[in-house]
Image 1 (tube, rainbow, N blue to C red):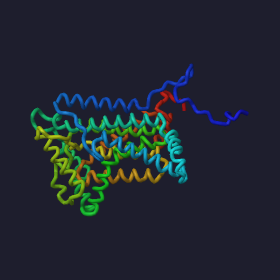
Image 2 (spheres, rainbow, N blue to C red):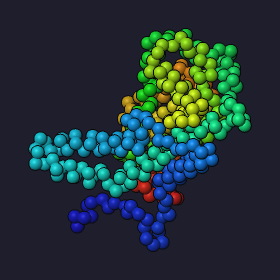
Image 3 (cartoon, rainbow, N blue to C red):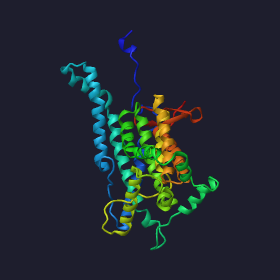
Image 4 (cartoon, one colour):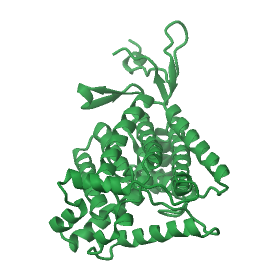
Length: 376
C-alpha cells in the first residue's frame, strides 16, 4: 500500500471540472452587496442635500484608522504568544515558528475574509452614520421641524405596562445609585465591542464561513436599522421626556447623552458644524447588534461560558437602554426582530444550514466558495 493512501485527501477548494461540477457562489456576495447599497444611498443623500459625507470618530479614532489598528493588534496577539510557546524559549526558532504559524492560519482565504469583511463593514457603518445624520433634514414636513413619533411609542409603553412608565419602574426596582454606574458601564462597553467583535470573527473564527456569517449579519443589522429610523423617526424617551431621568447620577451615559443632544442641536442650527448627529430611537441597534452577536456565537462558539456571557450581556444591554431612556419598549422589540432577520439572511448568504428546527447549524463550506445546492 502506498503511503499516500493513508493520508486523507482534501476536497478541491474550487468547483470540480466536468459533468459533476457543483454551482458555487461567493460567501461575501451578500456582504459586499449590502455595503454597496449603503454606500450608494449615503452618496445620493449627500448630493441631494448638499451636505458632505463624514467619517465619524469613535473608539480609537475614525473607522479607517481603528479597524487596521485592531487587525494589526489581532495579528500580533495571534502570532507572538504562540511563537514563543512553540519555540520553547529558543531564540533561533522564533523566525521559523512565526513563519509556520502565518502559513497555517493567515491563508489566502483568511486574508480575503479580513480584507473584504473589514472594508465592507467600514463602508456600511460609515454610510449608516451619515444617513442617520441626514435623518432630521429628510424626514420633515416642508421647512418645519423633523417628523417624530415619540408620543405614540411612549403611549404604547404605558399601554404595555398598564399605565406605568418603564424607566420609572426600573429606577424604583434597581435604584439610581450603584446600579446606574454598573448599567452605564454595560452600555458604553458596546462602543468598543462592535469593532473588536468584527476583528475577532474575521481573524479567529475557526471556519472562514463563520466570519463571513457574523460580519454579514452585523452589516445587515446596520442597514435595516437605518431603514427603521426613517420608517418611524423618534428621538428616544431621554431626549423627548428628559424630566423622567433627572433622578439619575452623572454617569458616563449621562455625559454621552448630553454630548449627543448638543451635537444634534449644533448640526441642526449651525451651518458650519463639523461632525454628525447621532440621535434616533427606533429601532434599538444596541439590542439588534448584541442579539446578533449572541445568536451567531450560539451557533459557532464551542465554549459554553462564552455563549452564556453573550446572552447575559444582551439582557443587561436591553435593561440599560430602557433604564437610561435611550429607547422605548417597541424599539427593543424591533431590534430583536432585526437581529433575527439579519442572522437568518446572513446564514443563507454564507452557506450555513440550520438543524433541529433552528437549534443548531452546520456550515456547507470552509472557504468563500458556497455550493448553491447541497444534498444532505
